[in-house]
Image (cartoon, rainbow, N blue to C red; front, top):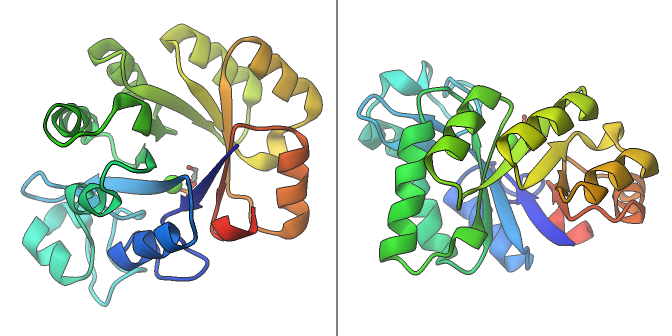
Length: 219
Ligand code: G3P
Ligand code: CA
């Protein structure tokens, strides 16, 4: 079972920053989860919200700033995070806006061909299922995680259609029956965001394949 640091190590250090991913490394995670949006000049930036308001001292939409400006607010590029992780970790890239899928696919292909990364180390996940369809039609070596916060059944149907690698459900949707169903069909289960000791014990008891947590050292 993989221990995945949510937005780095969000429970300890400001989310989706290089410091947070460094902290996740120190906590001995197996991998990290991060969120991406595009800058005005088309760079893949690691940030959860579509604006910079909540997590930086600035205001405005991510897509209205250049990558240089966003870096000055402490927002890293995906390339910078991957260089820090140095092909030793699993990286779950969550697409948050529907303009980034092509660039993320191309970046993964480049990391594999030029920087010693392996396809097994990457997953693209999203609640934007049409973008996951694009991944499956473009490069079938990239693992796809179907995110759901409300229906395992719908996620399972879609995962079958696009030959996804995993279903990534909110942990409260899980029970031993649906875990068995997903596993019997060959899908991994990467569940989120599991933080309290009780919830971690619950997720572990179901034998999921990965737990995504703000406190990955507690898993
Ligand atoms: O990857 C699962 C989880 O990160 C989805 O929720 O809002 O934290 O991106 P959120
Ligand atoms: Ca996320």
